[in-house]
Image 1 (tube, helix red, strand yellow):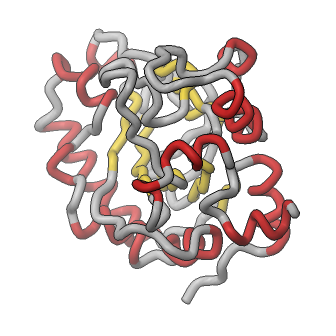
Image 2: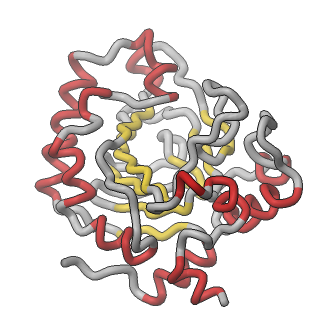
Length: 251
């Protein structure tokens, strides 16, 4: 069993809504998935479907591939997750996200404005919620440049978003975040293959263009508390509802 989050990491997660474990996933697991994604990118990706891939997933056939799921289940990541959220729904699928170098396709990949996943998504009905508890991202390619399609997140934004959901937001609104959050540039997630991001669902984030010469590749796992489907609205308004260990720390 891998070491769960340390008390210092737990405190950082409570403050920022995110924590990064560097070089955590073994290289052999990362290399297998990277090879599969690279093969799909070279031989199967349809540039005409870039917008669809961006909204949903790249390499859709790899979503429940054993090697991809091993990034979560066989790496120690699951232990990190359950040290924050002890009771979770089974994790049985992954999302592959690639920020494509513009020089590769000649097509501009849609940028993602500041948002919280599953709330007022442009490709969904505004009244439909597809929320969860914790986003886990495994870095599969070197991300050394903030202009290379890096995820940009707002540390501490989970607290602001919970307040907004409590006091200003209602189901059916098409705004994804309040104006004060939309104006944020965010902190870029830079890293190397094997790094792991644990990020509270309520942390607002965005993704911009990839002006670098190489694809930026991430594998994402959306983790839900075992009771999340019954308490989606409450979880939007109370950031620690599904995090008993954090509730204890913040109390």
